[in-house]
Length: 124
Image (cartoon, rainbow, N blue to C red):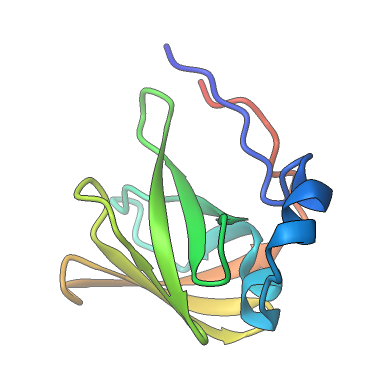
């Protein structure tokens, strides 16, 4: 069993913001996103998108069934590309609370909605 807490806006965000000027797109994308209208077989039920350590990076966390995994991501305007091998995905932000999640080179496309759910919970 793996436990991990992961805030979208890290506690040291104030310290980060002294050195990193986050973009409007980064700040809008950071938070808890829930998959909507997905088939029951969809493996991904939610994502937490967090601020990275530069204006072009983010982090993405998702449930794995045994806990959570986190990968680095690159952000270019309203498009977030997950960099790691474990979760090949692209998140296209369509508005402040709406986006699409495209996985496996577009073979799976899910709609996601930003919610006000906490992002610093533990994964079990």
